[in-house]
View 1: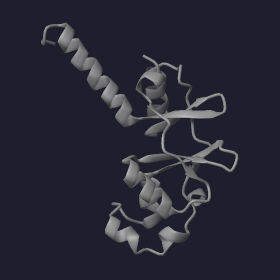
View 2: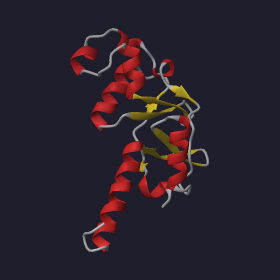
View 3: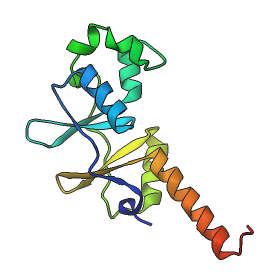
Length: 146
């Protein structure tokens, strides 16, 4: 199984100069926890997570009621919160390599790059779904027993 088999293709992205509000609204709208950050040339330059946003707000939770009224969310640029130069993986890499990189570096996602182009993102959730599917397929092929 390769990364391309489990990744989310064409992930939502955000721009370097977008604000914390933009990031929060995008994550809420898309239902994700990570956004690759693109520079003016459309190259990947960072990643921002919901944890980065919570840290910026000094809050353990991202509550819409809290951030709607915060002046900070309108002025703090993504560039101030993102992780620059994230660890990336190729789509044809084994899924086990993605797991190894995530565990070794204590990160919860990897942008998936084909040469200089962002083609996807693989997250802990993607890996858990792949594992769940493998277990279910094994049960099905073994007649429901494991």
